Image 1 (cartoon, rainbow, N blue to C red):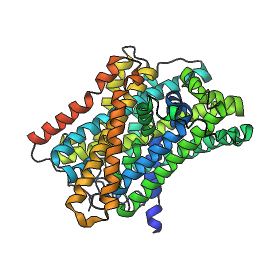
Image 2: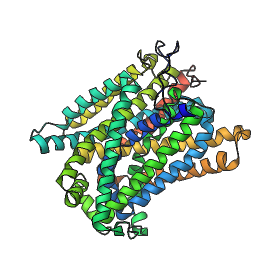
Image 3: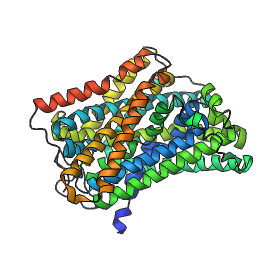
Image 4: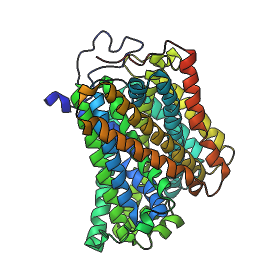
Amino acid sequence: MTQDINPTVDAAPSPDDGGSTNQLRRGRLGVIAIAFFVIAAAAPMAAVVAAGPILFSLVGGATPLVFVIAALLIALFSVGYLRMSRQITNAGGFVAYIDRGLGKKWATGGAGIAVFTYVTLQVGLWASYGVFTQQLVVAFTGVDLPPLLWILVTLALVTALTIRGVDASLKVLGVLIVAETVIIAILLGTLIIKNGLGVFSFAGFTAENIFSPALGIAFLFAFLCFTSFEATVVFSEEAINPRRTIPRALYAVIAFVGLFYSLSTWVISGAIGVDTVQEAATADPAGIVFALAADNAGVWLSNTMQVLVVTSYIAMMLGLNNMFSRYLFALGRAGVLHRSISRVSRRGAPATASLVNAAVVAIILAAFLLTGADAFTVVYYWFSALGTAGFVSILVLTSAAIVVYFRRNKSEGNLLVTFVAPTISFLVFLYIGYTTLINYDVLSGGAPAASWLLLGLPVLFVLGVVRALAKKNIDYSTERV
């Protein structure tokens, strides 16, 4: 039992630990280690400062409730998902689940969506990182360099850490997560002390706010804070006793992220005023939380938060890079992508996949930013929403796959776990996807290009299906046993 919760295990390497070209290092990650990767990718500080104000601008004082609903929906999805995880230990994440339930064609189509999802998420989040880093450097030094420069330098650093293996990444993540969590706790404590328990106001939980036309987009940005939870399964091949480690890590992540974001936004909206928070967030989405910290706790807290929001982004991108590199590794190993992507370093890290990922993300960011696109209002908004729309699509496919899988294997569990929960999950995520599509122009302010980029989802799904039809030897079954 003690071994399950250790962050890592310094076990002697087995013959296939580091020397094989298509084996990740096994038995390295316990509950805390996996939770660190996932929570880091959820970026507590960055989400409060960047995603929180966007939700305020969309649904005002109902933002905490949107986070609670998002957490409950992820938990509902996880009921059947975790039961099915007893049979699957694969770095291919949801794609391996879709394969078991719906077959190779649907799984490879889903792989196309998954690649689209995580590439666009990274592009959006790196763009936001560039903006906050630029602001920080200007504020402290007066040196004004373009966001793209900071992005490329840090992207190289994050890629190097990923290639060095999970141990190097964990040392960085542990320090950064603790620091940003403590600072947010100080902010919330200060706001409660100065404004009283009145910050916990229910006045914003109105039907007008909750069911506003922007609700679909609000859910997109709420789910953006949960997109990393798939990493619990992506790291399963490297987990200690994955049958126990993965469920514990997943529920710990859902509970922490759901509570952290709902409580933070509840206190912040109450301190600003539930009647005025929507207008204030719309006027200054990038600075509203920093201003609140300075007004209530002093400039020192605002400055500290500005530093930690940058380091939070670094932790987030390090977690995402580690996770998505393993995703690409699994797709290369399965034969969906070129086999060379499944090569690993001597430390058992997906080195080739990490380099490919960095190159693709850098090219897309350079193409947009060098042609004049605003890093925050265009690249961050558009690509983060695109990635989260892809994430919702993957959840729809995976929920359907879980239902079908358990209908074929009726002895696997009771109906509540194997049919009712995943069916409700499928219907709810389908509805969220629909409301997102019909209100997508809220995100772009009417810019047609944002909506046109959504075509990437069906296009890559079709390309994935075509790939499966053309290549008969795609095999998602290679996994740890």
